[in-house]
Length: 241
Image 1 (cartoon, rainbow, N blue to C red):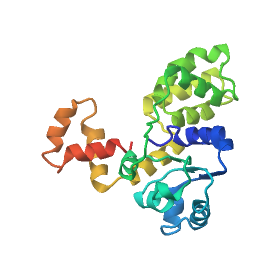
Image 2: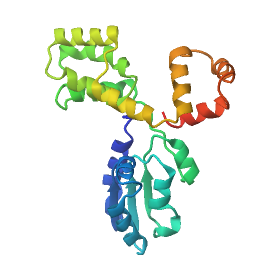
Image 3: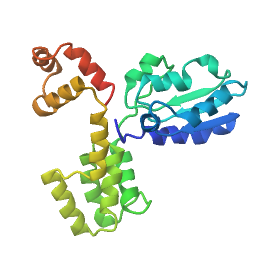
């Protein structure tokens, strides 16, 4: 899921453990760079080629991978790296990790209510996690709007920053009534949607428009009438959102 905190967590881990490795490299936004350069990450590939020849331990983060060929090019074999090396991969598509045979897959969970409240207040009140008393109830009431999604919490907090209580009430009421999204959220969601295959897009739209709240077996039974391998397509879709 876009904006759930994959890169933030990877960066935090990288910062904590990098002193224990001889080589450290954080390769940002693999998917975009790969697409822009016609299937190459030339400078990075040269760097990785150099460190593969050595015997020193490497900490490597590959951020925002979206194709199996990227993993094959950058970390195609364990033999390329010295024993004790660590590779961290972030991606919206868990199926890529399964195909590549990674050792462990961690799915980033949504924030709980307490974490959501802290992040909202941190964004809205200049790094303090305790809002002014007049805003406490408003913050608690509206945290549910984000459903634990960090990107939404940050966007909402930044939008509300510096505004008075009455302005908060008006803005939050409008968001709830008219479902007004932040443009940054729309851009993130559009990118995630555009990365889906045509079949995945169709199933996603069918579920979003017609099947919200329905039993999964009933949804599968209905989709199987119009879509081949609906169960498989849904599994692949779940790996990407």
